[in-house]
Amino acid sequence: MDINEPNAGLRTVNLFLVDSFGNGVAGLTFAPGDGKVQVHEHGGVWANSVNAVVELAGGAAGEYSLELALTEVNTAGPLMYAVNDPAIADFGDWVLVGASGLFKDQATPALRSVAMFIVDTFGNGVGGLVFAAGEVKRHKYGGTWVNVSALPVEAVGGLFGGFYTLTFSLGEVDTYGALGYQAVRLGVIRDFVEAEVVDRVSGGAGALPVFANTFPPNGTVIAPADFVFFEVTCTDGFTLILPEATLDPLLPPEVIYDWELDVFVNGYEGVLTPITNGYRFEIRKARGWPTTPTMKVWAVGTSGTMTIGP
Figure (cartoon, rainbow, N blue to C red):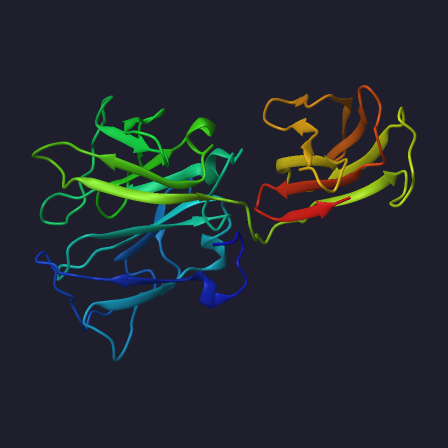
C-alpha cells in the first residue's frame, strides 16, 4: 500500500472474523471509536481506528472490511490492525505501507520489516514473548533455514497481545524469491510460518527521481578520455542508483557503480558528489572508452518510485 494512498478502495482491507472453532461469525456491528478496532503504525502506538469495520453483505459468514484513513497510512512500515469482540477469536493482520512488498536490497529498515500475529491453539494472541536465539528462523530462496539476524519486537499496549515486528537485515533481502520466516515455542504458541516474496522495485506514490544536467548531450560522440556527467535528485531519498554502460550491442551492459559498496566497478572510475536531494556523477572508463557508450541509469526512490535515465 502506498503512503498517503488517495484512493479509498486501495486503503481498504478485508477481514475474516471467526470464533474459537474457526467458523465465520456474521452479524457483528462496529462503530467508529468503539474501542473494538485498533491500528498500529510502524514505530507508533495502538489507537482506535478512525473508521468502523463493516460487514460485507451477501458473502460468507465472517466477511468484513475496514477502510483505513489517510492519517493511518502516512508512515512507512508494517501497519497492524486488530479486532476484538466477545463472539470472535482475536483477529490480527497487517499491511506494508510505503511499498508493494519486500524489495531486493531495500535500504530502508521499515520497508524490510514484517508483522507477525502470534496466537495460541485457540487462536488468541499471545503477548509478552521474548524470543531466544533459535526460536525464530528465516529461509531465503535457494537457501536453508537459519536464525534471523534480529529477533522480533512486540508492539505492546493494544486490545490484546500477539503482535510483533520482525526487521530483516540487508543481507536477508539480497535474493529474489520467497523469504520464509517462522517462530516456534512448544506448548505456548501455535507454530507460526509465513513467507513474503523479495521482488524487484515497482510502483510507489512518492516523489520520482529526476535527471538533469546531462553532458555531453545524447547522441554525442565522445573521445576515449572524456567524462560523462549527470545529476539525479529525489526529495524522498534513494534506495538504489544503478548506472550501466553498453559498449557493444552484442554484449551485455556493464555495471558502472555498486550502490551498496559505494565503489566504481568493472574498470570504471569517477567522482560521486552529493548535491541537494541527490548526487552528481562524473564517469569514464579508466583505460579509455573503446567506443561511444549507451548509458542507462536506474534511479529508485525510497517510496518505490523509479526513473530510468538520463
